[in-house]
Amino acid sequence: MNPTRPARLPDPLPLFPLQTVLFPGALLGLKVFEARYLDLVSECLRKAQPFGVICLRQGAEVGRDKATVQLEQVGVLARIDEVDAEQPGILHLRCTGGQRFRLKGTASQRDNGSWEASAELVADDPVRAPGPAVMQTVNALAEAIEKLQSQDKVPFAPPYRLDDAGWVANRWCELLPVSLAAKQKLMELDDPVIRLSLVDGYLRDKKVIVS
Image (cartoon, rainbow, N blue to C red; front, side, top):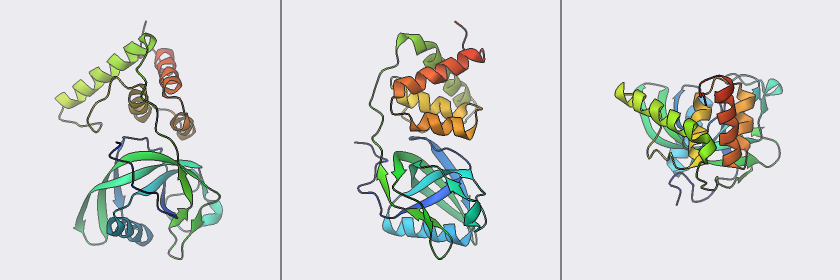
């Protein structure tokens, strides 16, 4: 059972638009200070439910001008793991990316300016082993994790599933210096083997992986 999967999907789902693409299993830190999103976090904590992180295709994270905001159609649920409230009116969240979801129709704004939408869950990646052709990419990620750990950094949430093509692809996608649009397309792919193959091709093009 996936520990990040909710027992049910809230309807409507509270949305947190960001200029980032969250991947399943990713760690996410957020500094929340806008009243509308403080309300959203309070609601999610009270109901023990996740919120949806969805990438902004156009527009800003702050402000209430919905005319300029365009959201992607597929996002990832965020489970709140820890909350720190060291300063009045500011929350520091540590979250974990869960299951993907797809909007059903258009998102709308509540009276307080926060976003919500009806949504449906997208199936988890099937567990597929990485093939021999991409093992250099798998090994390179393992080496990167080991190096970061030696510097007392925790880049990814354990367990480290290096035998799972989807997990490896997602972790590389977090690291790659590519556009948000490219990351969004990679996150939406149904086949984790294809996603890892595309990552492998990018790393070879950039000479990060050399045959």
